Length: 119
Image (tube, rainbow, N blue to C red; front, side):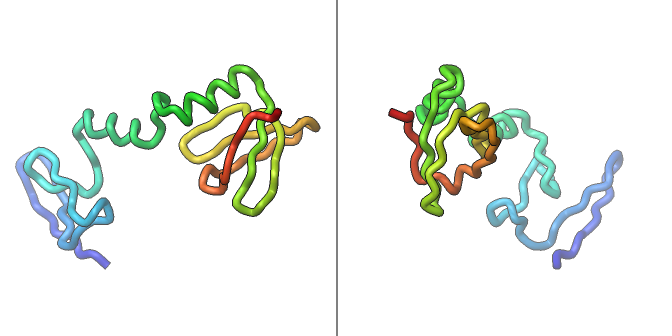
């Protein structure tokens, strides 16, 4: 387990990790001091958020168009299950599908093999 070194400054107590952090092998350096995972740079925060869910990507735009058109889709999962229904929403991790019986299904995006409009 990591040991925490405590530094005192005039206005604030800081904790500095002795070993590399889990955020890519190095501690996050903020304002010439090491932080314990709190990121204070607003541009970096925006970049991290956009890297998770970028509505400008073609795949996300396509799924958004299926949602707006309320179009039925076929979704094949890595378990070889084939689901048919309408996608109500998507986020960074999941799609929310409702079948023709109004049965909701939350699908993790890692389990998708393909998604296509129903012919």
